[in-house]
Each structure stands twice: as structure tokens, then as C-alpha cells.
Amino acid sequence: MPVDGKAHLRIARPSRDLAAAERFWAGGLGLSVLHRHEAAPDAPPGEDHSLLMLGWPDAGWHLELVVSAGGFVEPVPTVEDLLVVYVAGEVPQELVDRLEAHGGRRVAAHNPYWDKWGVTVEDPDGYRLVLSTREWSNA
Image (cartoon, rainbow, N blue to C red; front, side):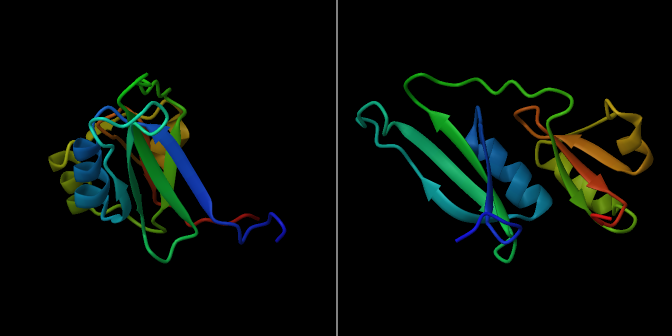
């Protein structure tokens, strides 16, 4: 199978707290929990991680968040680590309110382009979600 635009995409990153992440991404944004793995308390190194996969079931991508018990990896997002969702219209205020009620924090974008064309919300790990008013076009 060639690697092309039909290949499924996984965005993987560390998390401090999978429960808080699930509240934000599932309860706030509305992603579905696609898979969950809880590490056994006595799991050997290399198998001592818990993970949460979230996405929309019909999407060609999903988000994987991982907490590793031994050798914890601290999330270190930058202001340019963005996950952009193109809403193709006004961002509903009730969606922003729901994201904030589920652990998000609305922030000013580092790049003013995103303030002009959307709303930026930090997730509980400090990664940024941009809800863009624009419609995606690769032209």
C-alpha cells in the first residue's frame, strides 16, 4: 500500500492525566474514545503505559495520549504545537464554553493569524487546539 492521502494518521503525544484529557477531548470537543489501555500495576518496563485513543469514527486520523508509569515523559508543548480543526464557519460560543468547562483554557494565539481566523484553547496538558473559522482547502 502506498503512503498517500488515504493513509490513516495518528497524532501521539504524552499526557499528565488521561482522565483530564478525556474530559477535554471527549466531553469538550466531542471526540469518541476509540481505544483505551490501562497498564497493569505490576507491568514490566516497556508495557507500563496507559493510553487513550480519541477521534471521530469516520475521520482519517486519531489522537493517542500516553502516560508511562516508569520513565514518565513530561509533555512540553510549544505555542506552535497546534491541532487545527477547520469549522468552516463561526465557532459556536457554546463549544468554546464546553471546552473551558471540561478543563480547557482559551488563550491568545502566538501567531495572530489564528486569532483572526479562529479560537485557540489549551488542553489540560498545554497543547493547543485551534477551531478555525476557515474551510480547509489545499489550493
